[in-house]
Image 1 (spheres, rainbow, N blue to C red):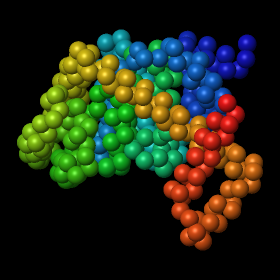
Image 2 (cartoon, helix red, strand yellow; image 1 turned 90 degrees about the vertical axis):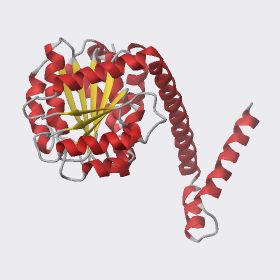
Image 3 (cartoon, rainbow, N blue to C red; image 1 turned 120 degrees about the vertical axis):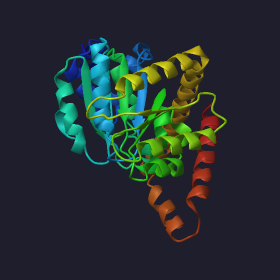
Length: 320
């Protein structure tokens, strides 16, 4: 049995060590990563993915801890992928307020992984999608993805999650930030956390007013107040998640999955084509001259890209 086969076997058995190793390989990218994803892909598509986003300091991590504990009480297994703006710690350690979630890692039914965003836009690491597939294949019932809290860059979460929760805290202008950042369009459920603070009710009214302006969405997003430190409102939040899930399963879920598969396929094709052309340029030692042309303003990146693509298509046709 090869190393990859052993790793895949471990993933399917839900072994934490194999899951962690596979995600590390995926983060580093390469042929091994592709082989792992190809092997586990038939075993994916069962987990329900929840995205949790919002400004830093709104209490996302504390809220996740309470959500996971409730899900575990109901016998559900959970995977957590937390995307950080810097390099991840090993062994499932989290940055800042995520330290609270370390206790969850002692639970065999919970797997936690912190991933570096590595400057990728959208608030998500490029490897996040594949890490979700690993946790899905490992048999997790729910997978929670927490993003870095980077304002308008957070909207990429909608590409991986079925239910997107936007967490805000009153008194810091977060409600206005959400409206400006485009989070209003992607949120399925809005949470006003730290609801024991002054102006919490006002924040709810402001959000409801803003949501009324978005008449295009068939699903009417709910606004829920929580106090993550005490667990207040978490049951109501879980109920809202289940309601949204039932709404999606009535027809929207299949459409979302199809759209996601299409996006992944196009992304994979683009990446493979780009990698092939770059490898050929390096082999033929023609990359530097092209860079010089652009540096000297004799051409531009888009024109060069068009020329290279046309050349590639022509060569492929001649081979046939």
